[in-house]
Figure 1 (cartoon, rainbow over the protein chains, first blue to last red):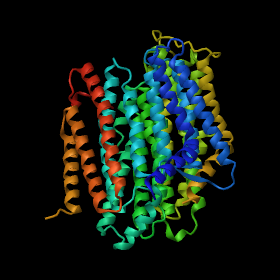
Figure 2 (cartoon, chains in turn blue, brown):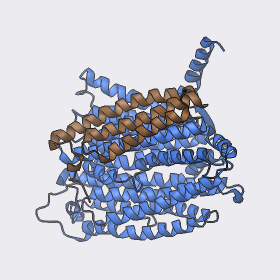
Figure 3 (cartoon, rainbow over the protein chains, first blue to last red):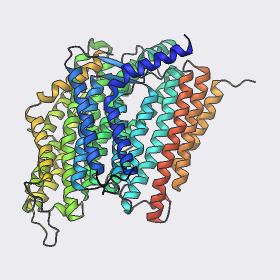
Length: 537
Length: 102
């Protein structure tokens, strides 16, 4: 083929096929450029950055809603490769795009209510926020190991800067330094792992991974005695280390409490939800792309059980460490770690079921495990953001974020207390809140996977035990809020019932309850996103 | 003598291990970031070697180019954060970053 023909074909592919399906990401890009341009022409007095940000996030949400309507209306799952196979566009991608743009809109709304970036810093802050979200969307849609790395870096680098955004504060700069040092190290190790995996398999395309892995396994002895397979396993372990850092799994969780305590509550909420969602999407894509490689089943089963072990350690450590915390953001950071552990349970169950050769057709049960993960993430968005929003609103009045600052809050801001109650009970997993349904889905999937590998029953037992453990530290905060009397010298928190702040947090709490009493609202969507990924494999 | 794939991978592995040791032992924040650069470049050596000897081909070279750019972007942000830390604490020793713990 002539060079000019190649270029013409590439341009045609990009403009006619890829760019129209890339609308959500383009909305974010345009918003970033607009915000910086507005500042350049000093029009930011007329048009504050938060307005541009709200409009941009709403545009992205509308765009992803349209994509959602178009894709989920079709009976069979669709998948299109974009940009010469670097990205993939399917129901799973669209689910995460919609999830992330909804979350972006809510975060922007929260920051404009609490005013954490002042007018001077607004454009910078929102550019970083939009840039990080863009990276997370690419994480959810990446179909190549190159995109995997670029997307992870694109999500991480703005996050480092956002943690250190409160410039004068010692704790903010310390949190940011720890985050960037750990993060850069994890990214380096992950890149080395990617080089090993891509080198041994001879491809960076994730849709070819299982095929090439089977070829490599067929060449050698198939077990870990085969040097090529051993190199692959080492590389996979290193990639997992990089993803585990983003998910704050033990032993890569050290940054999480420090970064959350240093960052403002809004940023901590963003990191705990969005970056986790992106990393889970990537982890699931990676696991699915390796599944079904003949001859490597023992390796993959070991990988799944290994994920289960990490999950047990992560949730136990997160829940135990949360007990002694006095700072609410730190407490929620450990709770975030524990929740990452619960969610990894689903991925572990999925991998174990996929690599079980005796089971026959497992696509239905794998899809239901993934449905559990997607549902849990969706509920987690509302319940965790609600908790962080309450902390941010209290901080604006008391200038503190410790348990002492919310003592006896019921007498001054009953709305915030009730929202905190809903969010915390949902985080524990009590019915009738959304967290219960999400946890139920995941536990059921792990129980299903028990027939493939008996370790899954151990995992399930630890999951249940941890749910009981976690009850106590959440209750401790709620008891302080509801049953104790407010200190005489404590600063008042005058949040009225009829105010934007109350409306915002009540909406979040409303969704948490809705997802608990009417699971079918989301579970069908989550299921068809999950089906798309499993069926097309 | 023409060096084979293994020789290049060995260089990459040595760079990687040096980088990891540097990250783990250096107490100076800038030193830790230098360790990260070593790790990234160890991976880059791997990519270029794989590009010559395996089916990965040009993909690997594109990979290496992107890594160079991303490393620069990451270093810029990391140095800015290190400077901010220095302004607040008057030191760049990562052991002195001990206010947040528990």
